[in-house]
Length: 183
Image (tube, rainbow, N blue to C red; front, side):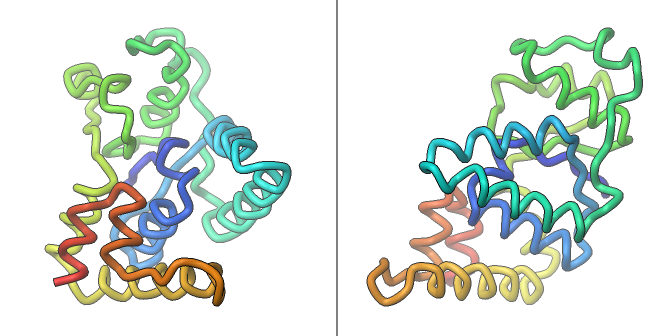
């Protein structure tokens, strides 16, 4: 299964690490475009002066880990597509060009299901996707969650919050998988 990851699911660290952890476990092949990665890097400016450089370093790491994941839209595809937000048409064009099965996004209103269905695509929310993968592979997704939790605890250090699986994933807007992995 090939899934195009929108910038809005790559920018939040915990959400990205959960999704890419599931990809590393073999549950799907991730796809993105250079423009999607650039949107992530620009969004990271909100964090402060170190946000964008850190995002660019993380982008370099995922590009090295998935060298075939970066897709360029086939010329002419973008021109024939429509979405409610014209700024998102490049995402749909990349999904079509990469023969993706779905777009993983939290921007539901910008990617109407009927419009995506016309292109043979689904829209998946990251929480539902991760929960569905957990139903198929509870042990594998639990291992991914444990790795993400350990990384968050390490990065928080002694002065940071004491994360639990549930609190970390709920804060990352992943409540269903949070509940499943906390049970």
